[in-house]
Length: 423
Image (cartoon, rainbow, N blue to C red; front, side, top):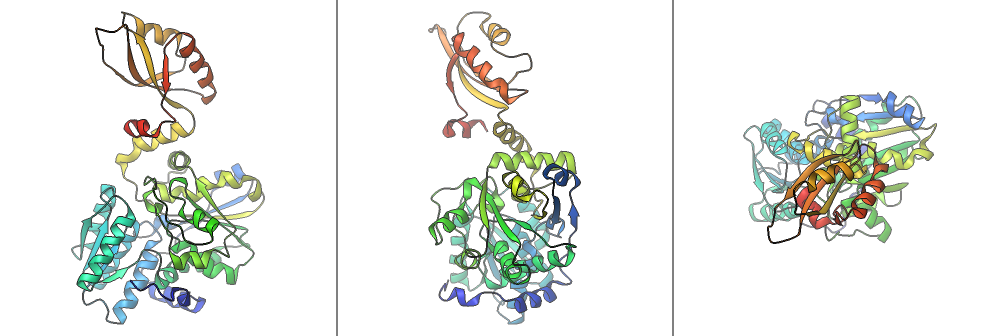
């Protein structure tokens, strides 16, 4: 790909208005919805911009359709299109391919949840072919670029492209039209930076006093690293759990647009994201994917600053796989300090487990995981035990009893290699 002079292609408001006309019959004007619960919790006016209610359940349809439609007008899609995506961009591309009758090839990580694969197939309706490649978005992106160069298919970048940014920026125009009052804080989820760049493009001109806060997963904090370094930085490793925002390197174009206009970029722990997902489902009846809950999970870090302010959180998307529910619950409990794993040393005599339950566990503690093999040639044998607490503050007492009675061998929660086997 030719990356020269990318910064000369910075989108303008005129370009964004053109994109909005292209998208008029494609995207929904999604609800601008006040959250009574969150407003009360933070003593602020908390408004949710519900992009999870788009046809493909995320804002990604805006940029993908705008880009492909403009290529279509220029007769540059005769050999089809190709893209790389962890899921939501792929659905936007698939939607556009079917609507415009264009063949598309979509590279996705092998770790992509099955639900997202099925959604891409559904929206493409025979016009797209999925190729699973690599473990991360960046692996898939490199394969898609190679495919583009070999076969001449137009590469549809998920974020680092002017027309993609212009499409995402139409969301900013919509927000400003729907807002009754001046927006003090705008919370924006960030992966590669396409949406963030779109928000900056519009807000820096039409609402410059609005503080733009970017929220990204702590395990893939590539924008924060780039802002700190003053240039784009490629992370060596990332946590892929928040798959919709797990990017090793933000775009050069998106970074250039964002770097001087965002107020802050904060990292949100994956466990906090999971806690928020469950909370929004149980209390708001909203089904979100991890990336869709980023901005809501970030609010706690700004609780003091947003008090009494008008706050907008972009919520996108809702392509969550139900098979991930147990992992989401587990991560949330670990984050809240309610779930703990130990290697426990048991005497090899009858009744030792009963003694452990009666004298080590608290009245409301529960064993949720137990793996033990008796070895007759030893006086003691180890077991991996998962314990769920009713209150995080009960942990110190549990640990003290376990040590004083000789059961404690090691604590696993802080050992990533072991926890990867358990969670």
